[in-house]
Amino acid sequence: MLNSVLTMETGDERHNGCPTTNRLRERVADLFGMEDALFLPSGSMCNQIAIAVHTKPGDEIICSRESHIVFAECGGLAKLSGAMVSVIDADRGLFSADDVVRQCRPPSSFAPSSRLVVTEQTSNLGGGAIWPLEQLQSVANTARERGLSVHMDGARVLNASVASGTSVAEYASGHDSAWLAFTKGLGCPVGAVLAGSRDFIREAWHFKRMFGGAMRQTGVLTAMCLYALDHHVERLAEDHTRAKRIETALRGCSLFDRIFPVDTNIVLAELSSAAELSAVELRDFLASKNVKVMAVGTNRIRMITHLDVDDRAVSRLIEGIEAAETVLPSR
Image (cartoon, rainbow, N blue to C red; front, side, top):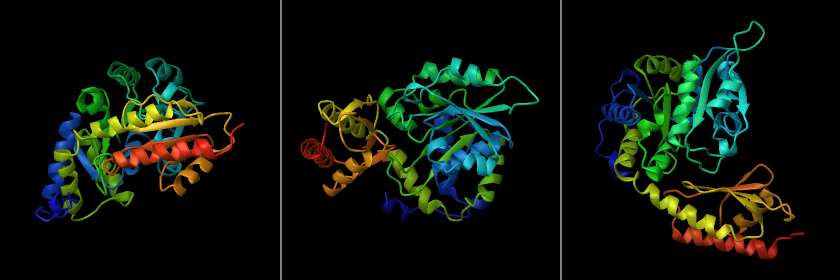
C-alpha cells in the first residue's frame, strides 16, 4: 500500500486536477451506482457534509438511536447544520419502514420539518449487523415517497457486501447519498469517499471547503485507497471468520449475559448482571494483558477484527477473557 504512493500521479485536488483522486472518485461512484463522488479526510465529515446538503436549520433527521451521527460525532449535526434528530429505538439499529412512517411529522407551523432519514450499513452499535436488502430498500423507498432525502452511513458497507454477496449498489438503491470508509477494514491511514448525484456533489464541495476539508495533492492518500479496493476487499471475509471465532468463545463465558449475533467484523458483548465489574474495568484488565477492546457505555465491550488483527491476536483476546473470568469478582 505504501509503495503504491511512489508511482502515483498527483495534482491540485481543489481544481479537479489530481488524476489519482479522480480515479478513486469514479470508482466509488460506480460502486454505489451514483453519478459523482468526493474524497474527504474522514467518514464523520462525509456524514456532516451530507446533513448540511440535505437539510436546513431547524429540520429534523430520522435515524436509529445507535447511529454514529448521534453517539460519535460530537453533536455536529446541531452545531454545523442546526438540525434536530428524532431517534428510533430498534433492535441492533435496524429500523423499519413503519418506524419511518411513525417518526415522519405531518406539516405543521408548530413542529420541525422531517427532512432526512439516515441508515447505517453495517450498524456499528448493533454489533456490525447487516441490514437485509429488502428492509433497507423499503425504508429508503418509504422515506422518498414522503418527500424525505435518504443518506447511508456506509462506513462498513463493503463488509456487508462481502458477507452477504449483495452489491454495494443494491444496498445504496433508493439513497440520495452514501459513503465508504477506507480507514476501517480496508486498512488505509486516511480517507472516505462520499457519493451522490452531480448536483449533490456540487453542493458537497461547498461544505467541504467551509468545513476545512479541501486539500491539495491528495493523490498521496487516494493511491492507497485505490490499492485497498484492488487488494483488501475480498480479504474482509478473514475478519468475519475471526470475529465468529471470538463470538463462539465468548458464548460460554460467565462474564456475559448477551453476545450480539456476529454478521461481520464487530463483536459486541454485554456484561452479566452477576459480574461485579464495569465495561471500563474489564477493558483495563484486558489492556494489562496487552489486549485492546473498547468500553461502550457501562456494561458493553466492543471488539473489532481488521487488517492488523491476526489469529494470534484473537487467541490472546480469548486467553485474556478466560483470565478475567477467573480473576475478576462476580456475585
